[in-house]
Image (cartoon, rainbow, N blue to C red; front, side, top):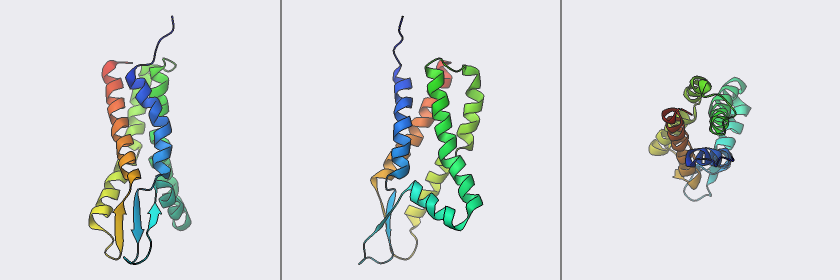
Length: 149
């Protein structure tokens, strides 16, 4: 008998597409002076700038902000499809804790709230998508743990 994926599993599979979209989506627009155009900043452009200035920090942020949450999402997908034992939930929780996406998001909110002091900073639609992905990932992990997949 063929099993249909649960809504929780489908939501998790959607994150496999939505996370990369959120990484490239504009999180904010920043400009030096109000009269000039604003540059769009995404997770990826932020990481590119970091790679140019501090390779070690860029490597850490890349691993913890991109790879850890994505590996967690893939692991949950495998559990939902019964291709991976639920006993690995502890490892997936560790990946979730290591993932700096939520820390990055909080830091981003602080920067947006305070501004940079010079110029202008506006939030963009990617910030809301990124926030939704992080919150959905937390909820899916919690729901999977409760269901005992």
